[in-house]
Image 1: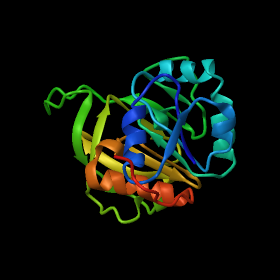
Image 2 (image 1 turned 180 degrees about the vertical axis):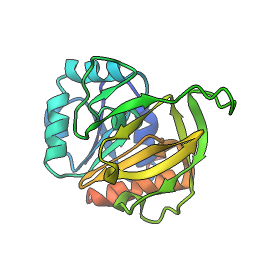
Image 3 (image 1 turned 120 degrees about the horizontal axis):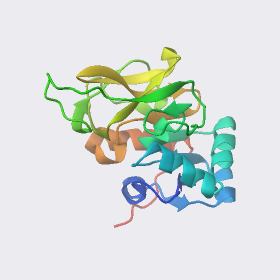
Image 4 (image 1 turned 60 degrees about the horizontal axis):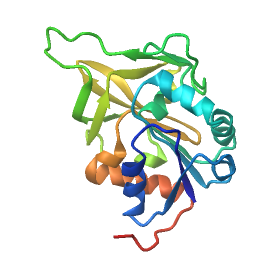
Length: 213
């Protein structure tokens, strides 16, 4: 069973529904044992970096998530679920992230001349930088949905799987071993976003069951 981490924040219903309607039942949980025994783990999130980290700590979920990642099983981070994998964020100074990847989360500059608004909200082309199983069958320059003011700046650029351009070129997804995490929202990204979730479910060994209505 694929587990979606419930830490009191984020777009849990839209993520779980996106899996379920494609015939992949998931469980939304903050139970440490369920998380530890899941075939795949999804960490979604919208909101502030500091609140996310504090909630995960408060519910005792930080260590189980890190242990799960270390186990080598498939992990998918979405939006804040990407950002907390890094060491820190400009959004919440002094609040440490998971440190799975070295680097920090930074804010978009003030785009006065380009007249681009922050947060970056809406559809944007993605620029695929390297192959990843979760991206199989998704063409370069496909459109995905973003809602964010911050993005990761990895110290190791080899983990960058996807970039996008919004006034500047920025990291839109990272991939290393069993971890894939995106700044964009696949559950809100129509055909290719759903394809990405199907790819993830396949990595977890999950087979299609009868989709719910």
